[in-house]
Length: 388
Image 1 (cartoon, rainbow, N blue to C red):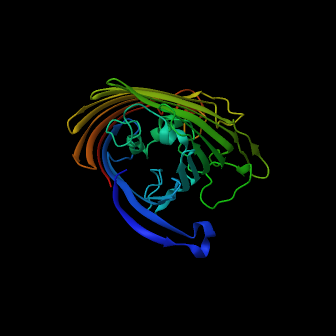
Image 2 (cartoon, one colour; image 1 turned 60 degrees about the horizontal axis):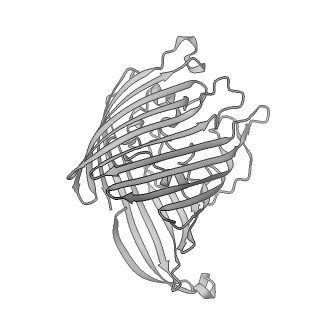
């Protein structure tokens, strides 16, 4: 993230701090990013839908940070965002998806608070990450909202790493120092979907809500090094947790526990970079009495080539599992993507992306009675971004 400005302030906190930390010099760092996306969609399952739509997001990050005489760096981070992550919700409210304390030193890094999962932050999904036109993380699929197709896709079409890596439940994280390019990390989340000052010790949810988990642990490692002109980066993460039950006072529903892993690697040589990743979440989150439980997997292959201010990208995703809307019917999606990103100025890019989505539902509750929810979708998206 590019930083817009750094404000040097002296914070006198004697009234609310211990004597050893009565006064500190703090750098207050502001930054953020924004995007505007416009898409034209053509698909089979488009009854009652328009072809064009816009979407935008703005995120602002504030990081107060200080450094002690012994080398300890400490502080906090707050990120406010205008996007709920759900394309079905139209809202002009701001909310936070980061709010945590941190400390860095020779011992490594400790983070505590509302923050995303380790593999979401550090897991490699190939060379084409968010912000690159042609990335599996570009949000292009969200323009299928309004049709039956988005809900018919498996969750693994949008959850590309460990299954709940995107969850911003309150966490405690430890990241080791780097040893020869290898760095490890582990996190603990008492309860998913439970953030900020919420206290929820229940192991049972209301019947009918999305499955949640408790005592979630994620651990893994990232490796980065260069060998002559060849660059190598790789990551591996594993996530486990206990499923919460659901009840309404009469009925009780149990779910499969969380067991998910993700591995990925990139190779670079000059202006060329290639990579791949694979995630497997088994039957995590399915109702224990479900009749259909397709193993949840995501396979990604990607490549990119940099040519001056232009970046050319190509990507393929194969996602399998049950449909994300009801988690009841086996589903799979093949997604081909290509794009070109132009760096207009430092911190500003604009890109053109094309996505072709082939989605298929097998026999199950959603296809009972002969319903055909299979789809072939074409998405052409213009994506302009600013990082500051």
